[in-house]
Image (tube, rainbow, N blue to C red):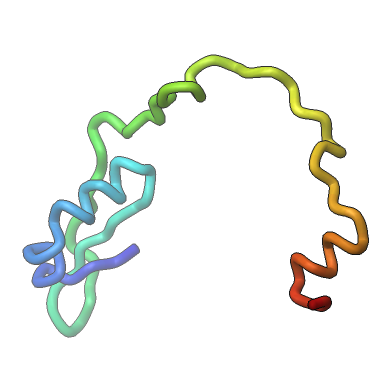
Length: 80
């Protein structure tokens, strides 16, 4: 991603967050958009497990909740 110096001034927090998430952020100068600097994360963000998702849960069968043709038609708004 590229951002001008003006954009960097107004959106610095967002640009830093994007760099922390692994995106390459290049700062450019004015109208010529010549690359002049890069924002790099010193410590990339790591995903933290949240609540019930922190521990592996029970296995869910692949066919669990498979819709019948009638239910699928209702879901798609094809029947009244």
